Image (cartoon, rainbow, N blue to C red; front, side, top):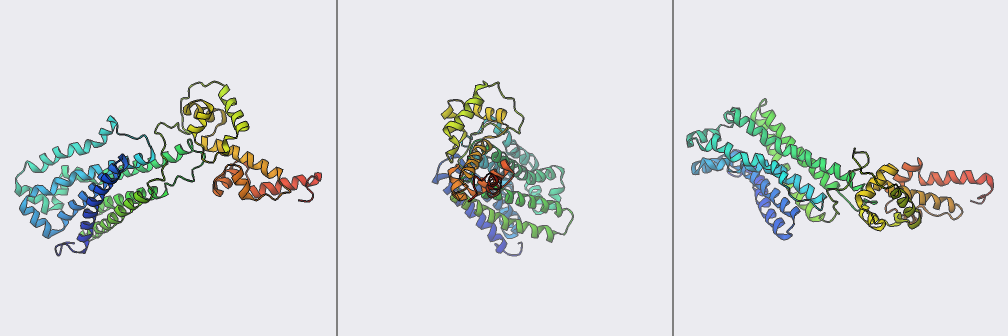
Length: 393
């Protein structure tokens, strides 16, 4: 990577820079919303980091820029402290339709605001000769206490926010089960995969820094080059995902009540709510609406979503997802017991019970009956035969 100007490995970084800049502008201005703004800023920061790596490790380019102004080598350092928060906020903006910046979010920007002061007192207040030493002798620079802390913070910041983003995904999975009765239309697998891959890339960068202290330069250099290729693939994958999966997240409110398994102080609710809900499910069969949501059911019952969620949690010990599918399973059981002679196929049973996917049908049927639909029908048929009720089945 340090033999000729713009060797093949350098070209990878140049591609990341060009793609990052172009795609960030396209993303921000093509469809103006918060998610696209955050994605565009993330892509711009990825380009800035690639530029920071390029000018330091491409020796011919480093010589040219060092002669122009050593100060150029520390301009892009802020990007490392913004990349993590941007991916974290981007994830939240996809998952929660009412996500917006709050005053408390400024806390995530503290490292960014501290960086200019750090660079001034560590670099810019010194003469150019000292700055050139920092540029050309990375080992010496990294052993200075304040720069050692800075480099560790630089490597750890995106890694920490990658973990935060994945925790948001885990929380989202739990919350959608308290909002939707059918989640087959919500596909977050690709975003989850991308977050894990970014986390892996940032973990790889941290490992490269750690191993550089104990291994030959060739080892850490090879790991650094590998990370550049990984960054290129991830930036492209993130853009492709964002363009092709922009509509798969229905989004839920950030204040959606948490599942029953999470400790929560619930206000005292009228005891009639439980009976109201039970009667409504039996008489009106709201569970037959394939994609019914917590908000829609609450609207039909003329109570608040929070009160409905609390009632389901406290009176039935279930979340909304389990509650609706419990009634669907009960309906499916009745269909199977009442149609032993008609050989009703399982696809029809599934659809007539309000289920939208075979996997959900079989999963919840087994959850609530400890057997598959086929086993249930066979068992009930066997039990019915001695009475002569279904001898011809």
